[in-house]
Amino acid sequence: MSYEGDIQWFPGHMTKTRRMIEADIKSVDAVVEIVDSRIPESSRNPVINEIINSKPRIMILNKCDYADEKITDLWKKHYQRSGFSVLCCDCRSGKGIKGFVPLLKRELSDVLARRRAKGMIGRALRIMVVGIPNVGKSSFINRMANSKKTAVGDRPGVTRGKQWVTIDKEVELLDMPGILWPKFEDRSAAEKLAFTGAVKDDVIDIEALADSLGEYLKANYPGRLTERYKLETLDGSICTLIAKARGMMKSKGEPDTERAAATLLDEFRGGRIGRISLEKPGVGSENNK
Picture 1 (cartoon, helix red, strand yellow):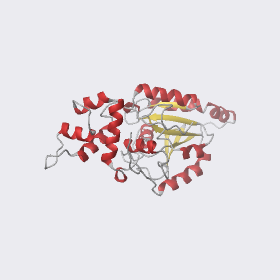
Picture 2 (picture 1 turned 135 degrees about the vertical axis):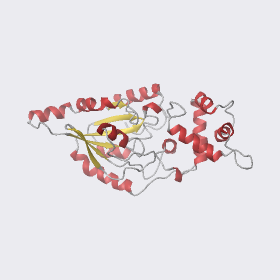
Picture 3 (picture 1 turned 120 degrees about the vertical axis):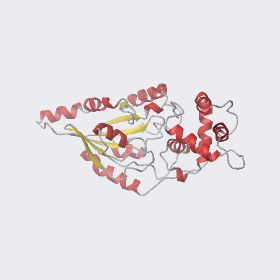
Picture 4 (picture 1 turned 90 degrees about the vertical axis):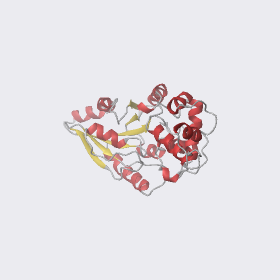
């Protein structure tokens, strides 16, 4: 991948979110960290690691239906070896979500045992839900609550303030706004975040980004591209190839590469090209162990 654009993302509410997490971390029993299965490491904010410290944590590999199954399984084993409890799920469809509460209770069995010993029966487990924008925190909470308590959207920055959501008598979730970095030091990680929509498109050169994604897909998932866009060759700019294949032409007969770029990114983000992962354990950015 070779996107050369400058990706920056630092809206003011990110600083506010960090302060909220720091203020509330002492009042919760555990933390649920949600990441995008396609980019598990790139979608983890090291700042969250610093704040959470030794608090019990469950890692949720969300959007698993969009990611390469074999690679997702490698990530699950990787994080389990690092000491995390891990759940693979797709919060939009609900796949795997029923496993969360049993996993949570196993993770916090010592906490529950201490409470029973002290006669603290009926006190709900309080769980903080964290993650960067657009990894599916609100979808996860809505699935758990079986309602539309939180705003859900495909754009980053939808959840603006923290809110408590009661799952049942035994579990309460604290939904925190997504938090990104003040500056991306790792260009590769920033690029992957842009591919998946965690960074707003209006701060990015969409066509250059789509071409970079296209180069990665050519190298790693060529069959997905040729099948989805009915391409006879993968030689040349992917945006030009898609524009010609889909009949996206400007008035002068030139390929509308900007429209093709938007199509490629939209269809990748929605899983319509197929199950694709952008990083593997041991390859690329791994800054959170």
